[in-house]
Length: 152
Image (tube, rainbow, N blue to C red; front, side, top):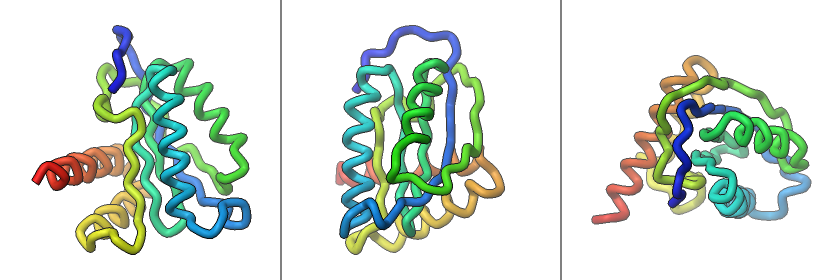
């Protein structure tokens, strides 16, 4: 977990992109997990938090933190050859983080994904196109339920 500096305002950014399958190797979900791990390491240093969701070859990611760090990180993502059809969905100022406990949480669909999680991931993917705020809250809800499930 991060030791956050006390910023008055944060930015929260939501984007969607597709994985460039030709440049990703044989296991797309493994590529997504590697991206999340590298992002978590970077985010710790940049005072960022967020979540990466991967389903049906699509990334849905939320970044939150100091505005200048969010912008720099998003610029780096835009230049990452693994992302194609990248679209910025939402960029807002917020006074507090929703993903404060995660340097970069990762929710990936794979062959072991439960039906409930798969349904939740599909719901987020649908919501991103119509209501960014609801998609964000649904991502947080999925993380909370996954965290609760792992404690059982």
